[in-house]
Image 1 (tube, rainbow, N blue to C red):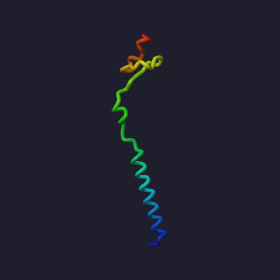
Image 2 (image 1 turned 90 degrees about the horizontal axis):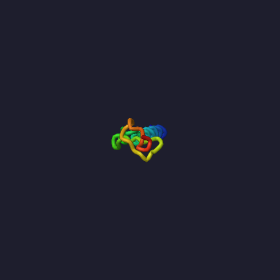
Image 3 (image 1 turned 180 degrees about the vertical axis):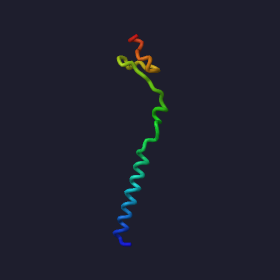
Image 4 (image 1 turned 45 degrees about the horizontal axis):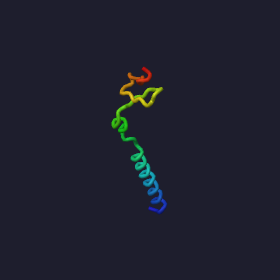
Length: 63
């Protein structure tokens, strides 16, 4: 095998390895953010009021 063939094979292996490492690092690992913190709703006019569910869409000021 000549040096040209070896360098081409080495280049292909290097590109494939780089692609595998990039995909492994950037691939999403699931919805870990949503499961770690509960959903919080706020009043659109008074965002300082944090509400437990979407049915309670009004703050104490709006009621």
